[in-house]
Length: 502
Image (tube, rainbow, N blue to C red):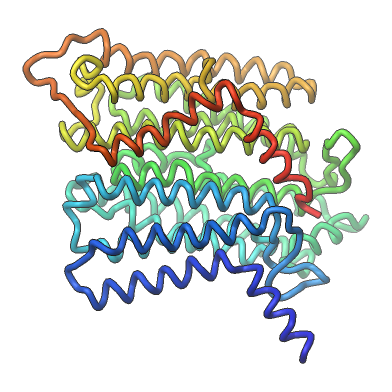
């Protein structure tokens, strides 16, 4: 009994970030209940809770253990630097989105439901934290459902136009189908192994009598559920409609936090479940059940190509950034396809940079939409002259999204291409490079409207207030700094995978 109590106490101490998020969620509900129409405190309570959770997450760097009930000596929740890295990324995106919300016209107009808004965001954070650390298929599925249910409601939060309800409905339909397919895959794995713990499954699938064909089917079905979360083709169909219809703050949140959790889950699922060995150069040898490398390369090329070519025809900025987000998911998948520690380091660096540049682009879209009420490219005509700060900032964010020097986006793609070249995947690297060239066209289209179209009497002048200017600089300066001095970020990424998976 004493051992059990000690284990429970140790598990709770390892889950302090999740406990903090849960307590903050409860506090937001309580404050909202008792203060009634006074919602001004809620965002500040939310930010304070995130900072406290962030403190506990930072303490998890360098740790390598488990929380929750052990199965075969391994728990359901992994506590390690890899998980801490993604949790920090999720918290950063969450704090930025809460700050976005303070200025968002769509959110301000629905002030009577701010309690529900921040509660659902914390529900997503809790689910994403569990996704990042889950080493059990049941917990993994429950975490995805927690994130999905919260995001379904947030996608239709504004209710100002029909497209909000449409976004929420499409999200639910696609999410329900993908979750069902994933659950079917989990049931197959459980049926043939008798376990849902990833570490235990790894030892069981290495047995000679394991049925590889059934394992292949189960693995692909589980990937469907994860592919839906990361907007990988052909599971991406929900993304453009939901990104366009949801409030801009939620669109930005889904493009970073939800996608980061999905990629962390995919990496951990493959690394733990199918790993056989890791050589001295850091390359993985996987159990011969699924040819993950060929499968992910195929999905990656399909995702980036479809995302980039679909973005060429978009006139709505949110919809264009949605397809851009799909394309970037394709690039990041290539880092996983390398099946090496170097590839995962590239993924971690890419995601940190992607968070700054994508959140920055959506922030400017939100500020312009607040003033003009539109999101089409024509609404950006001449803004480089009337709103120089926003024009220059958006230019830097879009150049970085393209991957051009001297911005940080170039560093993200550089590490990715280096990992591909080291793995002798030259053809794949060339395909990714050509896709980057295609992406340059639709980003340049936006700049054409900003600088080559002359302002007229309808062109507005947007001067952000002090708070928004500071927030813009917080997102903008790292894009410039990491473009020339990226060593600290690279070292953090390398240290975050030092003990990963073992």
